[in-house]
Figure 1: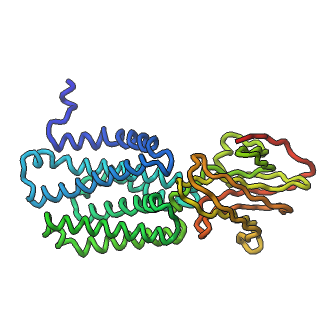
Figure 2: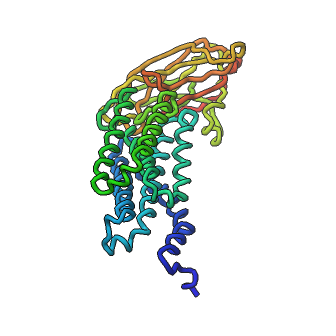
Figure 3: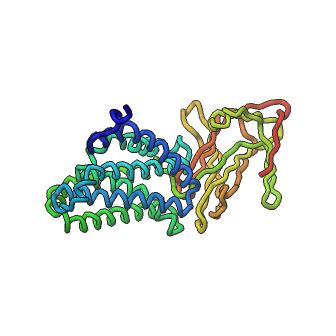
Length: 365
């Protein structure tokens, strides 16, 4: 009775895998990646992502060696139908890791374009098996994965961040994919030669598309990560401990950073607190840019800017704050940026004046 539901051939097995196992493995893989990539400077994150990249690169070579007839060993021919599935699994794990990594590094309001693109590739990957037999598609997806990895990895190992480091990450990615194609040409010369124009255009298109996204601010400044942000009524530091007061909020309101109301009593000061994670060895400047919405102009007007340095290495993030006195009622936001102007995150709030202080909660961390 059970045998009638089991696959009877290789193609039926692969079809069975795609229908039943693949969706489940996507969930399991995403969970494993979520546990492995817990903080941006873990070497485990790099090893996991590099492992997926290596598996995809090797699988791509094997697909084309078998397809071109250069690899005719019986074992290779037997497992050949499964190789695209393995490549699909590798890219699925890779994009799953990237979705976690990039979505954690900045507010979704900042990085949503790139995160949505990664999520689309992750979900679409479950239907890409037939495309993984096409060389230009293979190289395009491989280069996109390689570039996304280097954007994170190069600043991590060099302990340097900034626009030039992003460009260097792109240059390293182009160099590595060119080396990969050069090595491939020794084994599948005809295929590389026939598709070189399409492959070159694909690589160039992806490269310039990612560069445009970065300089438009759609890609977060990895490996920095906004771990915490809040609008406070008071903050006092004693040693390594911060004592703060803030207005109570319901559990679901904690997820809406742009919907806070700050009830400002006479003489009170508005504080904005942030905790920004950076890997050990990285030192950079962080900017708090206070802006108020001008309804007449229909735009945000900068009222105050504060810059302070941070040191990487603290798991919960380097803590800092800025304050503003004589805050007028209305819509406010504070942009949390790098000192070279790239947005890490943002917190928004509406100031309403009251005659007496409202009830506040206290906390220490």
